[in-house]
Length: 348
Ligand code: SF4
Ligand code: SF4
Image (cartoon, rainbow, N blue to C red; front, side, top):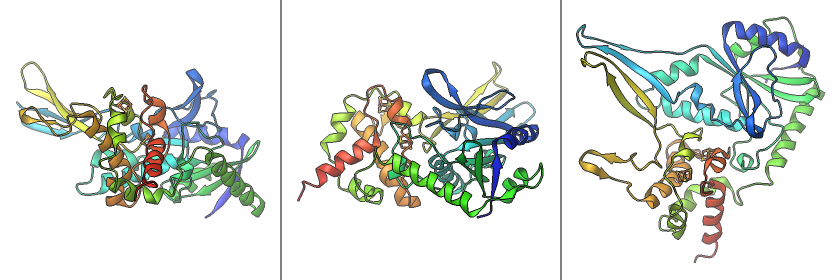
């Protein structure tokens, strides 16, 4: 992969140039000791060593609420609304890029989701090797610690003021070189980046799945009747927070609003979540996952089996956001999978 060395003092001018054409978002410190992506402007301090972005980055491709169609019955018109601003996400960790790659695959399959794909095409992604691991995260044991696609550039801090920048697309390289030539990365710089990656993977192993993540689907196959589902589900508040913060949850509800004369209106979609009691409510007041146990189990089957069966990878990238979001402390996939694994070792 082509790579260049970039110095911190060069980055500021680059950000200023990129922000002329794109809304640039960067990781920054926010209240409560957390981090989140915020718009970049002069004076904003980039948290290169952030551990986890509090909110999922899916909001840049699949906003919490999005208009789809505006209609006018009198004029007999209906127009699709494509709002896809040019945006640049600078500093996305590998596991979150994996989450985006999974959404790309899902949204392109079957009837392609044109709204998502328009936003995705308009979004430049610059990856960043993590320097810290959130205490709730377990991505290094979920096969999500590295990524080889889905980014335009990938940055690794190799010294106090130096980066190794790998090229992931022609678009990324053009943006990187727009201000002038850069030094191609030396063998030493590549080695420093490799060591930075190994170091963070090692740090991640302190909070890990106790077995190979590829075993998760087969494990869940055997655990449909585990007593764990009921035990955990008894504490579930059906708040849906674990769905909303998850980078790979993408379910939405479509609704319409019209003016008082029922002439003009808009069809829009909003995030939905399988942990909400109304999610599976259909006509006739029938709810096909009415029990907390059914909803709770479904979430883990979805993360650990159903997505794998269809796409060949887990629906959980181990970011740990759901662990942080759950007020009753039951939404921890690592803990659930480890507990099921442990129990399975004592079965015949
Ligand atoms: S299930 Fe939890 S840990 Fe896994 S990707 Fe979703 S939010 Fe992250
Ligand atoms: S965040 Fe926790 S309490 Fe809320 S729906 Fe998810 S598992 Fe249930």
